[in-house]
Image 1 (cartoon, rainbow, N blue to C red):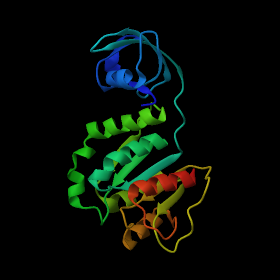
Image 2: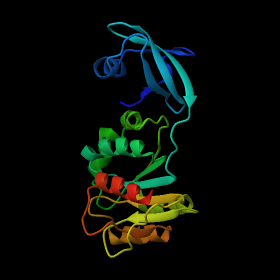
Image 3: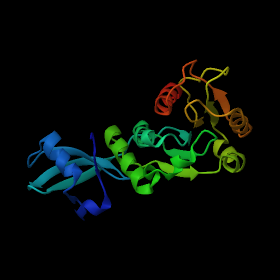
Image 4: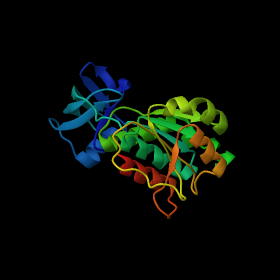
Length: 235
């Protein structure tokens, strides 16, 4: 936890918060704080700043907070992602938040099993919890936007073209395609499929929506690896 993220419910006054949950435990066990110590803090979807420990009890801590810094800029990106295996989804939400993705669109795909949509990791509370963990890692405060699209064809045909308009549209997909571009300086709409990639029909529809297939080489990557590798290369 590189940033102590504060929720509205934590505030007992305009410049005071009281913590008694995992953040309090982290302060004690990892930071080993004492009264008078300073910590980096941020307000969820707001500014960052500094907190001073005013009171430290066995069950809670009271902090005085000042917010005077903007959070880091997000990537100019919309990430379209086929829903991965549930065991991978939790880590992906954290990774997306850590890397600075502002908007994530989860879509269906032929290779996405129906059971994947039933995972509790897609519950809004779980998504938010994992985004928070990613933001704490990156020292960011702004939660990504999440859009869930369970019908691939209507989404790609009816909504994706307007989303991708004015951006560099890319489809990460293994095959005989151009290499993924490097150090792009414009807004990007990037679609990443399930492990093994999209099926040809899906690649064709994505192309009609304005997204060009690109590849990272012959190796087939796990989705979580592909997300990190593609974003690192593009930006």
